[in-house]
Length: 97
Image (tube, rainbow, N blue to C red; front, side, top):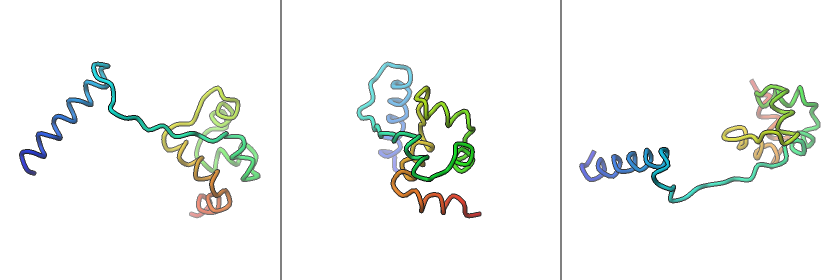
C-alpha cells in the first residue's frame, strides 16, 4: 500500500473514532425509509408466524414492528424493502433451500 493511501486510511479511522465519541459530526448520513411492516406482510398473504419464520425474526419482534413499538434496522429493513418491492419473487427466493 502506498504511504499516501495508508495515511488517508489512518485519518479516516481517527475521524470515525471522533464521530463515535461525539467530538465530530458525520459528513453525511444515509437514511432509508422502512415500509410499513404490516402492509409488507399482508402483500405476502402470510400470517405473522409464517412471515416471522420466513425473514428469520421472532413473532414478538414482528409484532413490535407492526405496532410501531420498534422499527426494523439494518439487514431486516433492507429485506423488508425487497419484499415490499416484489413480494412473490422475494418469498420464492427465501423459500429455496
